[in-house]
Image (cartoon, rainbow, N blue to C red; front, side):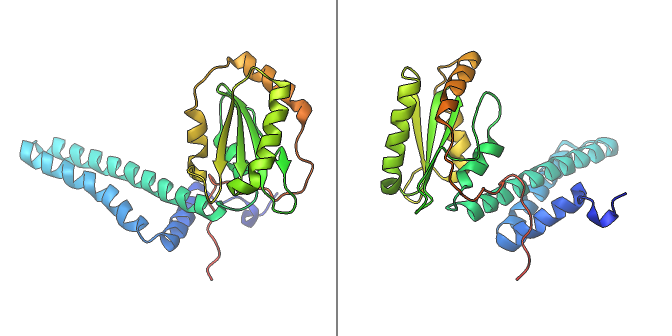
Length: 229
């Protein structure tokens, strides 16, 4: 049997670690969490007093306010922790791959490994196939990835000439931040059916992936506290 020290931490311990990490790296997190917790409680209490409910209903109102406050507080914690996690990996090679692997669900076919890489600069092109068609994600400065991107577009057009190709740029000079990558992709106009998505993905497998070493990204959905310095 494995020792207790080797077991994964429980949910409460994990949430406490995430809270500690978030509070340490984001000064606004704690005030926002307290506001999210206490705001509903105060509002429900005032409403209960104004409406002059009997003691039983007054207690129920307070309990409802506490539950709503706890829910909002956890939402704020998740939001702020995720923001920190994305900030920590943004700009690092492989960050786009991590987001694609862990952030896309449903009728999307993708990989955390790029389809094209510049081994000198580690700029990369990633490819995803979904109902909007083929999405090429460029990771790196616009001028440096332009040639890689154009080459990949030509390859895709040659294999699936009638499928829409969308381009999303992730880099220091792009308008799409890393944390909004999957949201941007989901908002693209849908033109393919589920069967067509699979057919396109299968045809594009002939292009393969870049057989070049590149650091794998970090899962932004699984925040871990850093070591205190």
